[in-house]
Image (cartoon, rainbow, N blue to C red; front, side, top):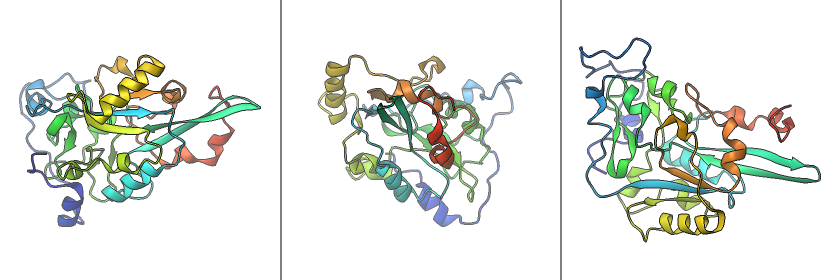
Amino acid sequence: MSGQQPSRREFLQKSAGLLSLPIVGQPASSEPPADSKFQPESFWKERITPPDDGKRYGWFVDTRRCFGCHACEVSCKAENDVPLGYFIRQTFYKDVGQYPKVARVFLPMSCQHCENAPCIKACPCGALYKETGGTVAVNYEICCGHGTCVEVCPYGAIYLDPVAKQAVKCHNCYHRLEHGMEPACVSTCPSEAIYFGDLNDPDSKINRAMQEAKAAEGELTQLRVEKQTRPRMWFAGPGPVEIEPRIPREGQSYGPETYNIYNWKESPGGGT
């Protein structure tokens, strides 16, 4: 990482009690259409362009291996001081089949670190930007807590911190990457279902895992490609197709209702 921006933990330690920051940096001219949540291109074009560092970070989730232990969630919460009721990543599930042949499938989800990231385009204060390897990150010295990023994210992967009133999302654990470590969720996953790495490195662990999955399963899956965000997360196994309707959409965030006991009564077809 560039090392220029403070981590969320450092920011919260420095500015406990700070509720919001003013909107800064928004150009006065070239206003977007009244019905658009996006800012003028001149405002975000530079920030949506990743550094020329030769890296292209991405994610691969093998839902064939995930057994729903939620260790990735727990490690993410501990690593990033995520408060109760909020999630940077979340594992969704669904029961499929008909009795007595039933199974539960799982889908670990987080920010897709889109190449054409709508959150960057919509941020009115210019806080969202591309970091090393194309990581979509938040500058907490600038974030004003406007929440437009939440409104435009097609994957529900951003929430507003209830104390700092700022946007929070996966940042690829860049504080760990700087020390040669993997994101906390990757190193914690006991079933080796989550992979992260440089897609430009043909010998990287993520590329080898994706090639093996393709050989066994055929083409990998991405979620909501019709949104044209060009996500950098791929999936293998039945999880994406079965669970996609349950993933939050624009204006939503991951939440504890996902695990509400009343969801257990849902039929395999999604009805009640």
